[in-house]
Image (cartoon, rainbow, N blue to C red; front, side, top):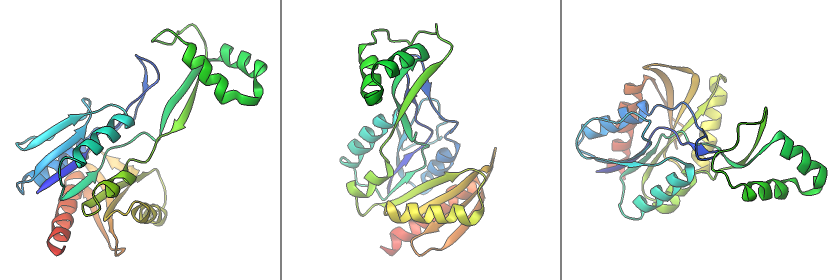
Amino acid sequence: MRILITSGGTSEKIDDVRAITNHSSGKLGKAIAESFLKEGAVIDLITTRQAVLPVGENIHPHYIETTADLAKTLKALMTTHSYTAVIHSMAVSDFTPESSVTIEDLETTVAQNPADLPAALSKIEAERTEKKISSDTDRLVIVLKKNPKIISLIKELQPKTILVGFKLLVAVPMLKLLDVAEKSLEKNRADFILANDLAEIHGETHHGYLIDKQHQVKEAHTKNEIATLIKQEVMKLEEAQ
């Protein structure tokens, strides 16, 4: 049994010294990996150097930083190996910096070319020679562009793999959380979605709902419970296929 797990959180570069990132620690990915290791699985782990790592043999870490790195590594691994399951628990940045300008440059650009602001901002970015944006400004304007959804690649690369996706919202009613998770399950052809709310994640306390394609919902209350639940449901589905 070979399992691919993504864990931790991506980081998107603003310049050579600054980045936009998130607070994902990789602890849940660690727990999931260690749960599968108990069953003798071989684990390919796509993660970051800031995330905590699982302990055990048969773990092959692949380090990335950006969402683009993640997509490249995921494609490389999934065209090299066949996976029983792909568990996409990494917190992937929805946006990445496209351009950044000082407020002074922005004001000048708007005055000179208000009709095509994106092109003007890209020109400023292309003409910048320094690898670190100067701090001699009180305000820096960063334009973000949307990243592609990595989860949508997985079933395209391996239609028969068991896909476990994750959906995180913040302080929403349970019914809304489950509804959004079910839409993600259908859209990405996932077999399971783990729906969780940041307001219910504190240390080892981690309240989550695992939803399958039959709209069955199972609940867990800690990272270890979630990891065990995912392992059990993946192995059960593998045996049924």
